[in-house]
Image (cartoon, rainbow, N blue to C red; front, top):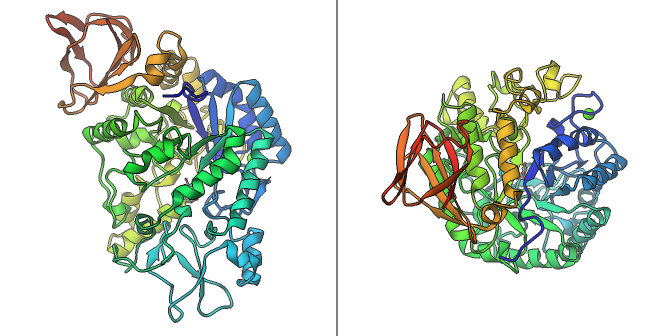
Length: 565
Ligand code: GLC
Ligand code: CA
């Protein structure tokens, strides 16, 4: 694999509204991020992805952009942004912005002009189509519920397309003029000094232009809009063009948010000539899903979690480097989701951290993950802000669940689990703000907060710091960054084991993903305990030499990184 500057980094995602409030209005902002750069540096972060801070009416929390060239006043000013870039640079942290170009906000001037004259220049910036006698052109459901088609005000039979909320009209990538506008904007930000972009919902930019019906998959008589992706051909042409015209001249770092792509096309995304540098590995996150809705989801078992990661690495590690996450702003907290109920504690959280950071790929942390933040307990749907949860709640009610059941069914998947304010300390509003935050703080902030963990050697935060530091530790960096990942003891239940084989050094990673102790045997001689989440670093009592290798007895949820002789 050709070495890239970002390969040995650890990345961190900030959801700005909930990270740190710098001016006491209850909303996180750019000054808040600047304040916390030293904290991130101390953690070992080299890449910072900041979710959208552009001007927005916040129908989808900033993923509906009304001006790509402006910072929303809720977050600060362009001067704040420039300062953030400069301060990050001083600390050798590369800043990656969110690029949301599948759609814009209905308040964007392009759409406002299209509304005035759907047949003029700006009408061509969107997908405006005739309906079927006043009904939508086809039966696709938007990602946030309801038809993807919305009537154009003032017209009986004209509709515009929105894959997400109706306030997020899709941009017409078939129009070269629109594409040039986007590339121009990307170059403008790169000129400013951002290192690159995370590309939001990017596979959706290519549509199946037939706009025809597909078989219905829910009680509402529609079908998932994403179904069209199976028939949309040619997304790579757009992506390659964008790479050549906008990213490549600046050597920009690009990471795609890509669901529903075809496995055999991975090379075209992250291979040597691929259109992105990396994409997120969502393989564990799509598990347990169900076409009917969140109410029908099921909990993912440790084995399923392991198998998903292993399968994905088997396919991808010779092609390129994907990014590993356990959570982000669209997903529940990883520890609440992937650890068995009732077993979420510091030891098991560290184990999950270890698996994620030692797996082949670029580690990406989401704010609060490093202190082991958990899902929130929602007492009523009124406490929920997330547009997507509210829709799924309605779906559950329509299906026949009562209010309590519906809330229970969707709470675990709610995007708001990850969007509660960052827990900085045990004081008022968890030290996030002096004013009541826009979204309620998780009740557990007196126990789970950064300040308490910062100087405690056994904390989740301290463990993350050690894991992150290992990635650039001269002795291990080549093995951890590039070493081939080879599964071991795959037949065991509730267990994750793999080798990372570097040139000249091999590490063995073992995780006992259950409460019960167990003893395992491997065909390897152990030279050293590199890291252990059970605070027995360097203690050899657990490891005995056998005639063909080693026998290792492990505590419940123990996680070990061992150096193989
Ligand atoms: C992506 C974002 C999500 C947003 C959606 C529409 O999936 O991560 O937060 O709602 O795109 O922009
Ligand atoms: Ca603020």
